[in-house]
Length: 371
Image 1 (cartoon, rainbow, N blue to C red):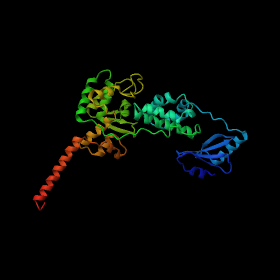
Image 2 (cartoon, rainbow, N blue to C red):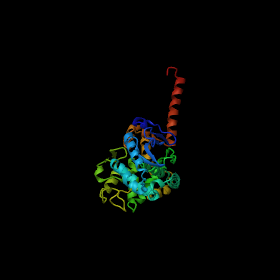
Image 3 (cartoon, rainbow, N blue to C red):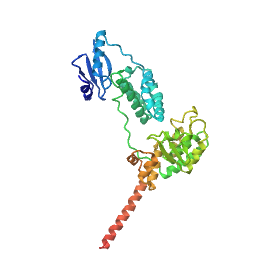
Image 4 (cartoon, rainbow, N blue to C red):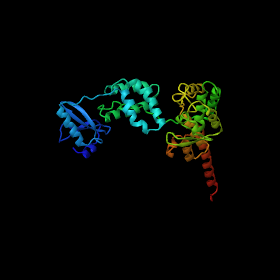
């Protein structure tokens, strides 16, 4: 076995091993994910010696010889999920991720993964346990369940690469299918939403009403608005340093500026602080949005669909797609096509206009030979 050959072993649908001819008790374990790990077998017990791309074959052989001389492979100390997730795994990504990403992942980790798996040893987490948890979570929040499953997969893959577990029990759990939605608010629904927000303005949930209104007025992402800081406000612009696609500018109209100016005196670091923890932004669900959806009869509309609605109104008003792309903060203009839906009445009106124009051309060509 050579380093080159070990790195070139191709993954298959199931795990398999290839033994070293120099030290037969040493083998490369190849996982379906493409991870390749050195395994030393002594008296029927196995010890992981690290990933092939990190440990040279000569080092793996020396370590395997040492274990053979001791006569037994050392018992593997497997931590519980909480200690692992909050320790080496979180340390592996927290420093290189954007602050908003860290906050989002911590929210899922502390709110969903640790309550379910935190007290279990890594090697006690089974595929069936993951499947049961995922199905239960999916009943109320299929999208949130998908996000949490992705994070669980990543953490257990990291544990496998570190030799703490032999397989990833979350790898074969299928996520929920997420159909492409083209739902956005009609003009009448926007009017009803505005009236509902007016009724809640200034009340105990006025801050939530301001957030919802800003999402519709700017087309910004929820994370961009709730995480807004006073230093990011520059007159009629928001200069966001930590947006999803990197630094970007959000342009404000008069009504949006008025909301922002009203929030500039909010206590703490954020314009929309959490009532329970003023030093943190108001992340999580907005109960007011759930209430308003039922109140105005748009229960199929998600909060993120306000971004769809903003983009769709841009398209209906004739704003060119490249401009819409910049307004939404898309790196790839092709992403904007997802939001460029128009309502059926607008499609019908366009079809009538085009049909009438073509009919006019056909009539003229029939009556005017020189046309």
